Image 1 (tube, rainbow, N blue to C red):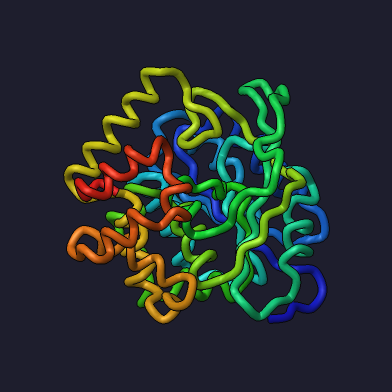
Image 2 (cartoon, rainbow, N blue to C red):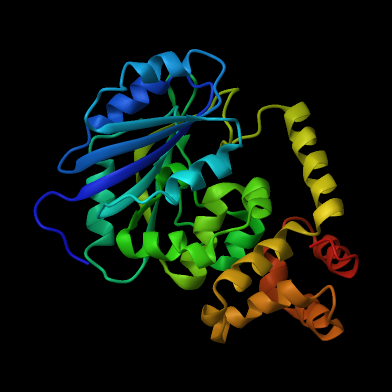
Length: 311
């Protein structure tokens, strides 16, 4: 892949009831240095003043806005991914952060002109709802293995930038992620899985984004109180009971969409896929120390989840 002159970047943003911080975020994207920006915004059925704010940008030459019904953050973002957009690079954006002016060009320089599919993920400066710095999210490099994405994803969608080759890989009509998956796990988990299994992923320890933590975050670095924490846990367990384990469902999805990449060291993915119906796979999974090391909780909890088909 190559481009002449200033790289063209398509920024994909889904909005939902984001009136409080939206304008500041849009302006920080438009202020990016050394790139040609086009922002594609899909409003996911906002009921506050978000649409009024967006209306102020409706005639902006670098912003394209569409309004839709409330389908949820994952589906909303993926509908933007599947649009026929021409660009050298692509990026996700949340509605409530602030980007430093060299966020995109720094990511592009890391990705380079590789013809291979590459996903860049970055660190974040955590702030409160008033913009006061709390700290850096990741003090050390994060694990970029598919095991980590399956068990405890640490790749954050709002930092993601990818090249045209990765866009073709993840946007392929024959490889589109199922609605069930994207409802359960949202878009950044899927991008993380595809990058670790079928592409390449880069992590940048230096943060270029002010990542707000506030009560209306769709996803955040910290849980917002014990009530929300337990509500999320109960909801997850209800989904596990209804649809099967979250880890195995992630593995099955990526194996079904990208089967030709599942070989060598990645063949361990099949253990997650097959353990429910294959005793040999179940035993191999139990004995695999690398797999159990990624799981939250004790080994006994991991063992019971495998035995009871809850992984």
